[in-house]
Image (cartoon, rainbow, N blue to C red; front, side, top):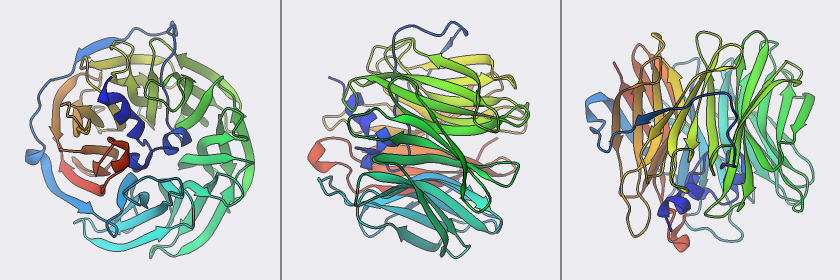
Length: 436
């Protein structure tokens, strides 16, 4: 049985993956099915077995610990003042039935020095997964535990000093949560995530449209046929949006979870214009979608399409402005557990990708490495960098911050096995890079 599997559960895709027990079901869990959608041919590229470390491209790197807790970053954004906001979660270093986690927001300078830190939440599972800028303020989204049931969608507006300006929760009868928030051209916002009305019912993708006051304009639920969750959303074409989702079809929450990935194009009212499902192999998942300069989009994730299940490979798809696949690449690392978390496009049309690569098996099954990929405009590998260990190290978010300069955030030192040591004394990790 592969330690990769257990690892995968802890890929807490949205924030501190070490915290991920219920969390992964919250936003971006997925895995494959049986027959491939016919539309695209997949280009298989060999992923290198070895790679140089990151030292030649590092400007600085920092670790942040919150009072000895298990901490992790899901997202990093840059404010109008040039400083950065890290969005994530913090909680005890050991899982237990009454596990109590909080949202964590840290503001740092361009040099990586802490300006302020805010731990937010009450009793229960409170987690933050996404942030955007709203003038000089910040909007942060995630999930908040409730005393009556499980979790609600949670959105906070913070001022530049981290004080709460506004707080809202939205939810039904059981578990709901937001994976990502984005702004819309009408000064409103879109939230993508998951809703589950009962412990006896499956979860569905939930999309919520908010106005500038964070009041609901409309919401849509998308039933994809299994335990489904929305993972990410982006603009595409003219006034349309595209979101990605993952659906579990077998072994939900187990080591051999399976399922498929989907992208759906919608109009500004949430009506479906186009839908594409990827279900070849046992496990396919999408983690992030970003708009590209040509009006299209690029999606990153992982797949076992060309792998020995339950191992997986990094998977990247480029879509044109009509949401048709231009190219789809699988970066093969047979027998390993690799996947991509986030991507940014550079001005010349090339890409920088943050990923994970389990380059070594250990008795504890804890050996994700930080992985950085530099790709040309067609997705061919220009170079890779890998570093980290001995426990799980993952970069979940990357943004450009200047000419050839990037900043990425994630988690360092999380534990996925044995269970009595999960999630371990993980820290938030941030690195600033200069990439030619």
